[in-house]
Amino acid sequence: MAKIFTAEEFDKDVLKADVAFVDFYADWCGPCQAMAPVIDRLAKKYEGKALIGKINVDATPDVARRYRVMSIPSMFIFKNGEIAKSFIGYTDEPTLEVSIDEALK
Image (cartoon, rainbow, N blue to C red; front, side, top):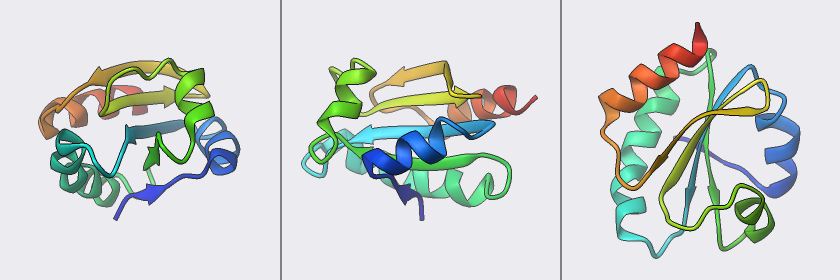
């Protein structure tokens, strides 16, 4: 299962990771719910290689504002604390895997 980050964990863990994938979501969002099993599979697949997790925009509005999240799900791949790639809306698993693999190179 993917880790759910607090604002403090986001700054401490995500921004200091070599590669991190973060899904900005809300519990009430249908497309976010559709992405949840995909994110969980990615977390399992990349365990020990990349940090994979989610952050709830309702619980952490300051982090969502910092990254100008206007639509959810919004997903970001961070490399060394910087955004390397972003996705908005439902995105298929193979596309996300290719992008995470590229960030790991």
